[in-house]
Length: 259
Image (tube, rainbow, N blue to C red; front, top):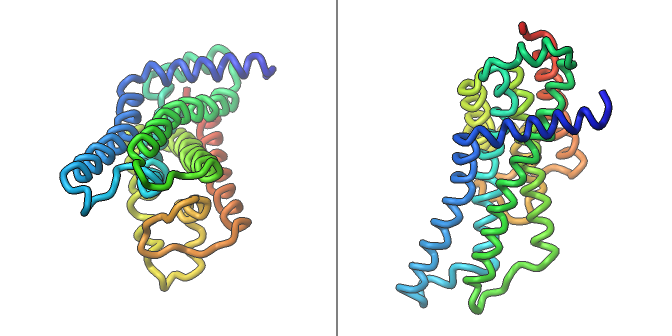
């Protein structure tokens, strides 16, 4: 497959995702609404009691916002979009039509990943811009994040949401069911993994959790009761392993799926 054909197929997948208005709207709501509520509530508290409650922006708001966007609701939006990309053709009943055109099944799977990443990062970029707007607009006398810290935040949010998007594409393609894949990935990554990470008796085995490996790169405190200490090399290997397994299984299932 030539680069031109791959680009056209990727653009077609992006267009298909953009037409899934329900998924895009929910993903946008997940990343925008919590941040808006955070700044509205903090501003109202500061307005009513300036002595007890500090300004709504500044460095503290950036740290809280990074937790909200990078570790809670950004991942949820990434999972929604990734699963939609992985299961969309099958759910819409067009997978057979795509296969009979002679297109490679692996190519059909491979182009889903960059398409899902593009859509996820467009949504998350808007939310990150909103976070920075609130941080600086409501900073008042508080210190604001440096350019380096902002760059680290951009990198972390892109990494966190990008990895989870790609993982969700692979897992969604493997399972084939949108509700089942969304439920399973959210239950594991958002609910079960943090609980397992807090079981200190598991020791270093907790380093194998994807959520912990991603959290290692957070530029701000993760606000978790217990954090697993690991090296950067270990975190990279764990992330790569999760991605390779999920994408390999998704590609295998796409090749073997009945058209």
